[in-house]
Image 1 (cartoon, rainbow over the protein chains, first blue to last red):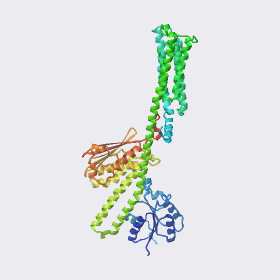
Image 2: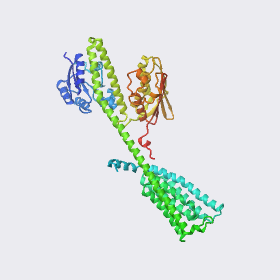
Image 3: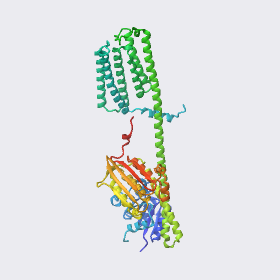
Image 4: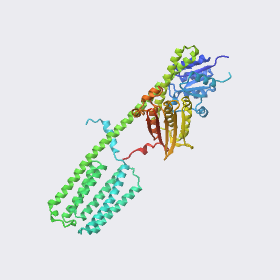
Length: 131
Length: 462
């Protein structure tokens, strides 16, 4: 069985590197992109097992747009998406995946900062169990 | 003049609103009250003069004029009761019409009660003074001209025999000598015009002061907003590097695991703790600026009892660690108020947090919620370290931490109470703090169930 691949899309290079080290240490393969467009390309080319997506990249809602496009593509529709945000504090925006999954097509919505342990728990929880 | 153009424009805009339709309406309501007194005065004066003084005055005409004034006043009262004060120009016209009618009737009363002999001629000055409170510049003088003109016309009319002259008392013939008549006319004109001039100058000065105050107020509001915008920007920009640094240190701890030396582990632990504090400060700052964002609080029916219960549940672990006793006095029913749930939550979290953080181990924290007269009163009381009287004056200042608090804990941000105060005020409430050093602190937050007033409801039209 090959390593599970996780795509990290975030414009904070340091944070991408931290997530990479944490996930690689736990035995995952990590690919990354700094922009939404590059992330979409990589998602289509490499069909990762999971995508970790930052809400605010260049534009305020770039992450949301990427998530919608992923959900519309045939190859990418079923890839679990974990969304990271620093935005909840600024807007008072709270996401409830049970209620809001139609509105926001992601599996999990996490507010930064997340500890390495939290990150690994979320990844394990949302990865598909079969290959 | 040394006044730049924009400043000047601003001032003229402000001046235009010195009186509002509503404030003018209140003034005319007040005229109406005064006029009842005038009616009574005319009647009592005429009756008294006829019965007691046995003066040769035409009683029917004087009583009739009083009745006319009465009818006019009833008309004004009905008009004010039936119409809304909306248009400033329309209200100003009403003021002018009422003044002119009053002056005409006053002149008629004077005519039937001695004309130039009657010392009540100076009542016209009252109208000029009232005019200078409500009208501006030339309009004040117009009232003075009308008052003086009517008086002059009446006196000269009587003097030339065009109007009948009614003697007041057994007046001396001297009062019909030209020097006396001219002096009476000139003295009234002098007093009227000087009153108009003084009145307009005083009011001009008052308007300038008010304009200045309004402009300063606008500047202060703008400065406050700019400061909050700055906070918000800083908050956002500072948060992400802190978050990234924190993640890096935690990842290092996690990956290093058992291989890390105790010293390195200790250093990383200190870094995480300090980064946590920095993040808390940034989050508090975000809270502090949140309520002032466009739109303000989002108001809907909220159960404060549920919010309090939720917060107490979150704090249960911290209380257990410090072996604190929690005493609650909450109503059986939900406590609904029109409010912002997120802001209420921050208010309760910060108050309970403070009570817990600054309690001695084994102490008691009391939380009470009472509804009375449409007000919800939340009280959080601890038996902790307390605050000195000097520090109590400053605890609502951003970043201020009381001396005792700093000695007790390095985890406070100095932003908790400022947030509570700001949110409470934005929700239309008030906050009180009572404390004694070494004995504890009571914070009382009072909120209106109906929620904060809309800006239009708080505006003073006066």
